Image 1 (tube, protein in one colour):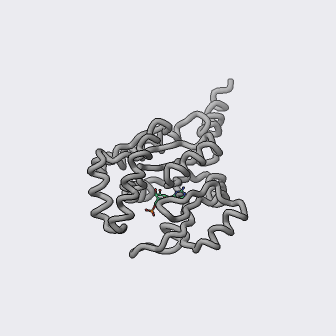
Image 2: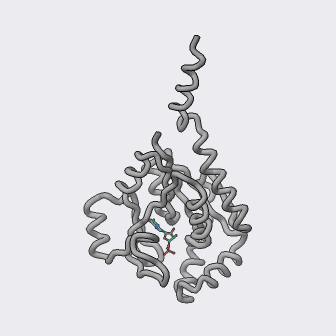
Length: 203
Ligand code: 5GP
């Protein structure tokens, strides 16, 4: 059975790393799509785990080859999703999480209508600002850009299928898992199992 595609985005891209990592650890048959990016590696990151870190000429080569399902310039760096990587995983029956920005989420939804859009919202603008600041991964200038972008990106909620409010982490983990588990119960995801059961009802 083919897996589903979950697009997860949030205003400014902040506040969902821990949440997604928890859900990936707690659910089977769930894969994270490792994006390509031209941004520099942060302390603690590993090439091939959080991202495939590449330089601009390599990224532009990927665009030319045509294997990127989507790509976007986010906060001054390129980010993009490999089409073949996610298609292979889905064909193998894995559900795939795309953790991408709002521009990318819009493009993927246009290209793959069956994808499920989940928006992760912080409980308030101030909490988002505090979380990003405490992470200490950006300069104050980069942070201001992210927070300014967040004011428009938040409107994307109205195009999404599900909203998860990331206030209490345990509740947000449970909510995100519920969305994924409920999608797995859809009729079209269970046709093979149902067919087997129905044959036992034949007289
Ligand atoms: P960060 O640099 O903090 O890891 O991510 C910055 C932003 O880029 C976040 O909003 C993240 O969701 C987004 N992002 C990560 N990978 C991709 C991708 O493949 N495509 C797009 N469009 N955005 C991405």
